[in-house]
Length: 107
Image (tube, rainbow, N blue to C red; front, side, top):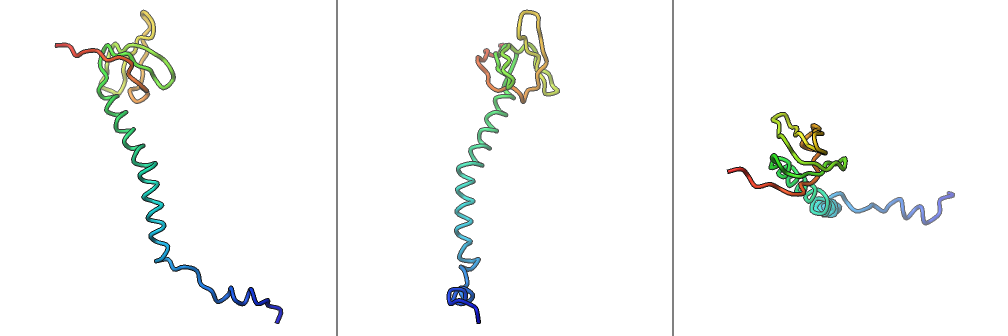
């Protein structure tokens, strides 16, 4: 009785089906995967390889900004870093941000 024609027409209209929307959602997921997830995984693998390759004598920068030279690599996931003459600190390997200069392996 008090229903306008616009409401009456909209009540019978159905939106697109779920099957028609599925390709759109798959495309959005693919875009997110190739632009966000995949590059982040690649960067993480490169960082893990760099951390596992550190050895005594390498100059490093930690995530906290400390610059030092590795004096000892421990088996428990830590390294000893000399940040000044006679000042050694223990640093967790995963907090190493970059390796500034690598040393040649001992023969």
